Length: 472
Image (cartoon, rainbow, N blue to C red):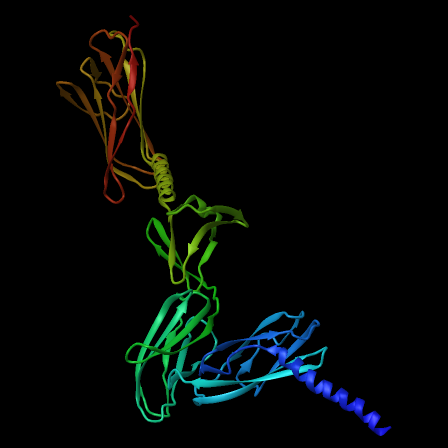
């Protein structure tokens, strides 16, 4: 009985040992070759073909041991019977990894079938260079205009014997444009580290946004040994400053408003305003007309539209407050007032007559003189003139004048010592035509001269009068 029981068990075990080994041999990892060359300091990509030989759809899970330096972008997938999947393996040994061979065991596990398979892969690590950029350090990541960016490339040599002469080229880039460039040459000793330092002053002309710091290490043959790129950011700053300058002159004022973009970004479509007393609008003369004008609360507000202002750029708005018109009107008013006052307070001389200008009749001429001022008039001389067609009758009702016969007529002169304020005098004389006058006859103007309180000589003239003769 025991022999009968053991025999089937041995048969079953033999079956699984035989056919199980054959089953495992048909599944799983098809590639790659067992030895692969990889490079230190680089991402090394390797494709591994996985085939489902189970006869049923199943999901596999892939792992590696040891786990350092190695990763899989996709760790698992589901395959139908006979389907093949190319799984990518990434191996990233550090730049200072020792050269030699490292063995990784790649293992796949079929989850539903609970079947596993593994394969060893030998990786030969090769160093492309013994001098490399181990780090690039910045004093900080974000900056404002006026601050300083400090860049420290750290160069490491793992060469055990030789001193290496290398070149370090550092570039600051914005949108693929080189903003600043630094070049350094160093001799690095075996198994040592060199730290460089370069400063970049952030200006308002540097636009905000992300920047790149690209460090390239080359040898004397200009072969690139290593390269590293990091980023930093310049913050946006909005700062518009206005400076107003006023120059006052006798009849006008010049005003300049200078607008400067002291930020680091371009400003567009903004307004500059100027508020003035409402009465100033009559004297306002801008060099560039404002976009708008608004009157409110006894003031007038002018607004200029600035379409674009780049960092560090300035624009100047100029206008004048001209007072010519005010001064001119004021002068006219003052002159008019003075003239009116002068007319009102100056001495007056009025010339008039009575009678008809005929050959057989006399005409009485009257000169009315009055001091309308506030001071005494002295050394007054009154002068009148009679044309030759008339004769002066030697009969006077008031002060008798001194007469002078001239070829063009008769001159009458009266002398008065003084005339007090408000005092008046009437001087009369008579004339008689020598010939018959038909129509009208214009008589000459009379005038007076006098001395003011300050001794100035002045003159006042009467109006011309017309005497009517016979009607033809």
